Length: 264
Image (cartoon, rainbow, N blue to C red; front, side, top):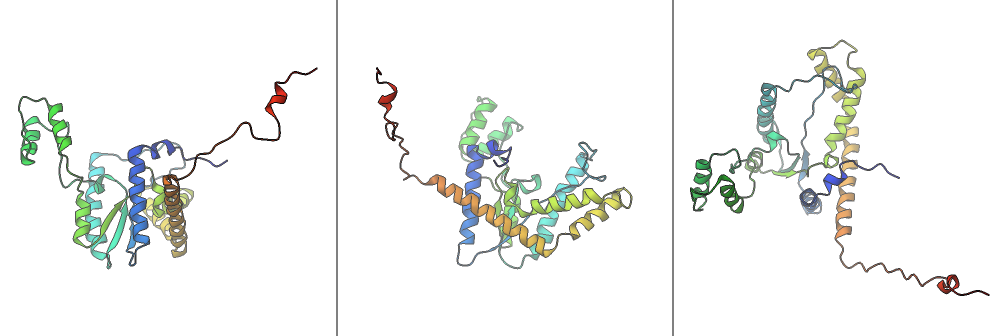
């Protein structure tokens, strides 16, 4: 028996399965192309100042901290990453908040009716002011354009492409394995030189320094095999010409009549 992923049920929801197939298909298309682009993996994480070996820990989740993280993430993506990639690349990322800012805002329940009507008019839809907000949003859903992300457009301006990971499939990102290795080291050694923000930053850098090129190379190979395995699985499930499995209960060495025949 193998331990199953507790998220398996979520991973097989129709829209999640579709996102997975789309990701795998685009990934394999690049791998099998004549001139494949380099994959660039992007991810983020956090560590607790005193380590995370205990069950609970305080953390700073203030609005200011979250907003600063989003702002710094956007700035780093454009000015540090995009401008330093020499060749057209495929950037693999998850759906973190600062990755998912939409360039084309679409009305939702938080919009005022007047703003929804303005959006509908701009998209050549007649807006009847007598309709309720729910009805207006139904009209929006009928004309809703494909999602357009800000970071995707930024990447395209530099000649790169964004490939988004399907939800609940962090196994397709090798950096997730790297975080696991680094955090294990961090949690084991934090407090060696004292606690506090300064010591936490030093220890985290020390943990990252344990990630050698060989460790990264091994992690990449593992992830590539995992992606190939999942793609083979999807292809196998898609085969439609497999004949039905027929079991004839009358077959076999024993005659069923021997269990029903009369005996002297």
